[in-house]
Amino acid sequence: MDEYVGDIRQRVLERMDLSREMSDEEIENLIGEEASRLMQEEPISIRERLMLEARVFNSLRKLDALQELLDDPEISEIMVNGPKHIFYEKAGRVHAWNQAFASEEKMQDVIQQIVGRHNRVVNLSNPIVDTRLADGSRVNIVLAPVSLDGSTITIRKFPEKPLDMQTLIQKGALPEDAAEFLKMLVRAKYNLLISGGTSSGKTTFLNSDPALNQLISNIFWGQRDNFLDVPTDCPTRERAAWTGDAGLYVDTGLMLMDSYNVYRKWLAQCRYGQYPEGKVANIAPPNSKGSFMTAMLAGSVGWGDACIIVPMAMYRKYGDVRILEENYEMMKNWYAFLESRAENNAIQSGIDYGEWCEPRTNPMMSMQNGNFDVATAYFAHSGETLSEIAAILGKEEDAAHYREVSENAKKAFEEIFTKDGVVESERQCQYIRPIQFGLVNEENCAKNAEKLNELVLANDYHLNTGFLTTPAICGILCEYGYEDTAFKLLLQESAPGWLYAVKKGATTIWETWDGINEEGKPSESLNHYSYGAITGWLIGGVCGIQQEGRKITIKPIACKELSHAKAVYDSPVGTIESGWKYEGNKITFEFVIPVNTVAEVVLPNGERHELAPGVHQF
Image (cartoon, rainbow, N blue to C red; front, side, top):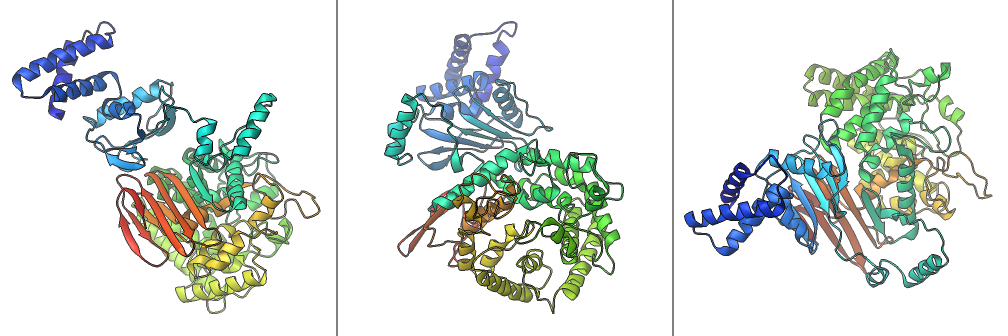
């Protein structure tokens, strides 16, 4: 059939009058004539002829191999991964389509046809674009090599019959009393703002706890409000794109929304603002002329290290080596500056921001306590990451150098800041960092995790972490068997804890744990996305979705107190879903794996499964 399609298409193209715009009817007549000729030469049925004519017409006047899928009202989503692999979703199931584009060039023609209707541009300089079809269907296009196995097209169709209030009530999506309230407001001629709640970003997380769902909504709004051109820390005060905030949040930021281009542009601003000696400006682009203190604090670890952390996170998610190539010189210069600060493989001089916004501390206290354990930890961690980046780029000599420096820094950290590999401190953050960065051996990681758990219990399941380690605390507790502690910490409703702000009526994330204290007095920023990095664990831990390039691992952590949780992640390789639900003592899992991928699933009981594309239940 494909051979016949190509033959008739070519003959029709040769007969078309290119001096004028031919009508659809004229094109159909030419196709019919060529199909009749074919029937005289080849034994094909009437049904086959009609299918043949439709495919040729679609290839000339519509969206080629996609048109028949678009015309089927029961198909809800179309996924294209390269010219030869087309899949569609129908009645909740994913199927492979028996048609394909004739070539990569034909697929690119269709892509340009789609984006051209709305005057959009997609090319290697702007490889990701969102647009719509004439019927309103949403389209996402990602060109290779950002898309790893060829260019991709994802089309989400809308139902022919729009959802009305009664349908929403029947499906349980809208309570009847809420519907009546909306009707009353409309009759009273109120202006209404309808927001998307937890599902209007790139990723959705839903669970049984209303306060936790509100927290997710707050995190989405924090990112929406701040990721405008560059990732600013808050939209109401300095509105500055701080490196530290961007670095600790990047994994979450890339999952919640398609923010690749926001980070890429921001990294260009970081390159522009780098000091001659390698220091990275803390704010990019700069929002003032700066001062002596500005230049001095540009050498702060955890902040400047974002120039290594962010590109690597982007590479892991998207697999586009260009983001490493673009920023490699900046990374090298920053790390050369860190090497200049180090003596005997450790950093024990200079001023750094430190943990930052740790409970019961102020900025001056944070900078005055030395922070040399923080500095040496990042010196080791960034060296290890930079070594990995150098190897990816084929720079083996650089890779060997950074690997050696990192290993020596790890040894120095253990010798100076621990007692035989175990931390002695009353601060949660100081136990998290050596585990998070692998600065001590596995046996000592377990001992430090045990002491971290004891501190959380002694603090009545409250946090006392700041910006740098908060994103990692729940994941580390779970990794070492303290799931109960992690979930109680997550659901803590008094300060310091994530749900305190929710109970105070917050609709965004606050800069500090008690942004509005018990007396109702506000302080600092009340729209600051950094502590929202916990979402990375909710998606990657509670629902267990972990994706690096084409590698998908799902390792959920279930909790009876939540009863159920589900995450839907529109990843660079397709939509990944993971959910679990308790019914009494019985737990069920459901996973959706995108086309052209294979996922390794590890259930809480240790069972392992390798899942092909489609829907799976356990």
